[in-house]
Image 1 (cartoon, helix red, strand yellow):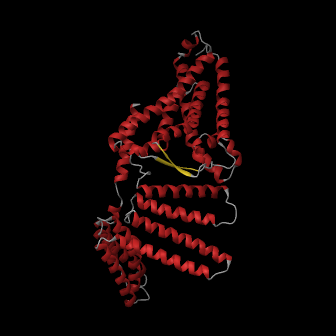
Image 2 (image 1 turned 30 degrees about the vertical axis):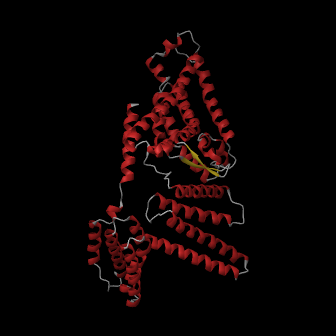
Image 3 (image 1 turned 120 degrees about the vertical axis):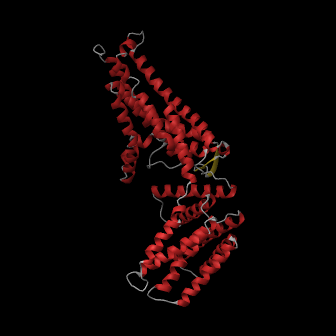
Length: 466
């Protein structure tokens, strides 16, 4: 428990540091800029072999200088990257490339100056209004083409283009109505993901053939992403913030699952074998209890340990995470799209953690049981712990191979079934034909297959020479 507590402190500090640090400081530092300039001085723009590299480095220098000029305003950096960067390369191509054109270069320079003037005015809404105007114009032109077209295939393509343009319009309207400057914050990420997911849905909806199972899963992911992003933009709540107590608890098993498994397996893998190794098993067997009752008590203790380790780790994370990040984030709900009701649901983070715990229990219990069984049968703690941990670590590889090669028989294998989170909220499982009831039954079968022979062997085992 002390080791886990220290580990939680370390992990939380890493979360806090990782999310507060930025790599952009290095990319546009003076050292980086000077290194490019030094390389640029060794190139001759009149030499045909150097001209392409010269243009690229010259454009990079100008981009870095602009970035450094506006480095205090994230939205300006975003505009420079998206709207000025390509102009710089284009202008230098006309200035130094094979087909030089001073007139074209001057026109592009005028465009760059117009954009930088708006940056100096701190007018990000100008660019959002431009995006909205462009989208409206595009929709108008496409509708005009649609009215003049009779070909079904062309009409279908035009309808998709119109829908995509309407998404671009919606993004621009979100920006203006919700006052979202350009940048890389969670609202801009939501806008980007919304556009990508909506575009993906339009593409799938336009297909005339039935979606394959993998395409249906991708469709559901896009549907979920679209609903989640709209929620973020409409409420202004960052439900995906990971560097917070709520974010860590929401991803509790993905962040700390391996450490929980290690502790539980170590206990389960020694709880019987240590009795054999130390010879204390004889002291147990002389008690007025049957061997089955003794072994059952050990197994029940192992199961109780599972809940104890999970609960104590959650409590310690509450203390450590609360001190480092504060407790305010606990009021933010977890957002899940329920495919059974086709609605977005708000869930309290502790209720969500409870649901995830129930979904992960089959895997944890089966791994603990494997360690317990090996410990009982071979009286070797190292063997029991090693094989159980290898089984856990190979889960992802086994499942990926099964899905990659479409091995349908693997849907009856334990690693494909012991993570019940795949069924939560109406999600499609890993493989077609799987179901929650089937997975529970398979997990119970594997549990009994391990326990029944173990109890039989332990009952008949000769303990005299131990």
